[in-house]
Length: 104
Ligand SMILES: [Zn+2]
Image (cartoon, rainbow, N blue to C red; front, side, top):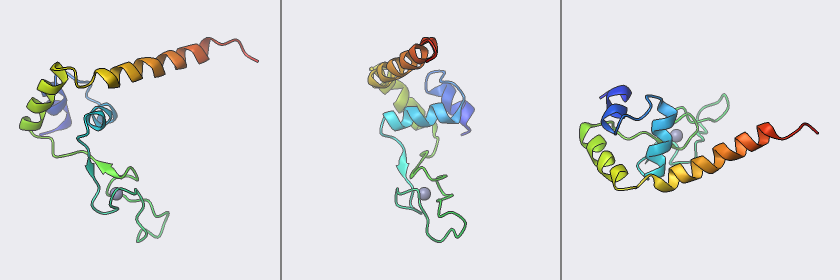
């Protein structure tokens, strides 16, 4: 299933990989990268030792299945992402506050 279909089934999430990734992370559903074992570093990459299995993140998206989307939707409807959204609201407010601070 592609990201767009998956995001829609999760409850009309934004079709952006970073948003889906952040929400799956908040739900504890990202999977540890097997190549780097979650470190994000891969010594056999001679260029910069970044693990390209996970783009250096250490965690990867799980397989995007209809069953997973249905499970997520139920959990989200039950409030599983409330702490995530509360934290996001605080971060957004900090960004707004920093932009409205007078220079100097
Ligand atoms: Zn990795």
